[in-house]
Length: 340
Image (tube, rainbow, N blue to C red; front, side, top):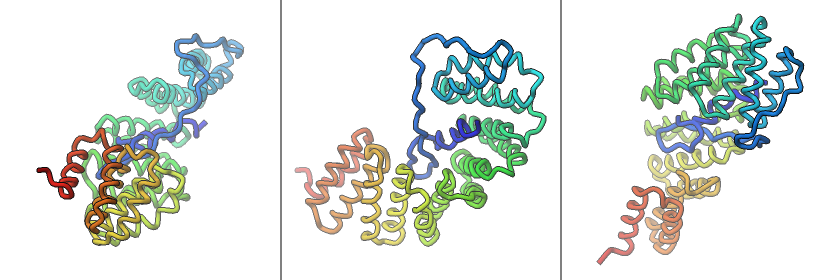
């Protein structure tokens, strides 16, 4: 059952920043596609076909309901199964893990989810056995989302002790560890250490968040004005993130910025801003509309006022919900057509 829930952390950051495209200086990942739901709002849970006391069958019915996004049936089945499985700690840890996931993923109730992640850990007699170490990690993820860096780092340090044998887990763990230092502690040096570890443990850089971790190394290099390192990271990781359009959108944005601001190469920057726009799932989401705008700015710098105005029109259309951006575009327009 592992694959059902454990990726929700980085897909939400990807996140604090989890499930949203990131502006400069933030980290993030794209949200996972929703599963189809067979449950109608407010509908009563269907009757169980499991025999009374068959806690494994009741649990499996709950898992199927979770997969169908039927939270009420899932929670009912888990509640029915719990009393009959109290002498089976391995069953209980799986039950509490799935129970927590239902509250977090379907009910959007992190308070209740945290309660069951803790129960998952408490009943486990071996924290190196799945999903106990994931439950410790998820306590850290929730702390990160709540802005509690101390609690997040404590959970991640503890989880690291027990999850060493699973590289996909360590990949995720180090990603959030890095994000906690970057977003909450404002410590890029420590963040960089964990982004590197996330890459190092990964056996497949095309699996998120590995490619995001390499990208973040490039972003930090860009912020430190280290063009050589930034360009190496961006070019190296491009093939690994091709299937993630949100990632490619972000990657091309910073890649272009590195050429324009640090290398003073508008030709390469223009090529990458265009790729940023082409990769954008939605140009109304940062950095899509800004890439369109900067394409216009470069056109203007090259003396092509007509192309600049076309791009400014497009940028304003997609960036209409960003007042500060609209002021910036208006100011640039005035350099072409000064107000009387």
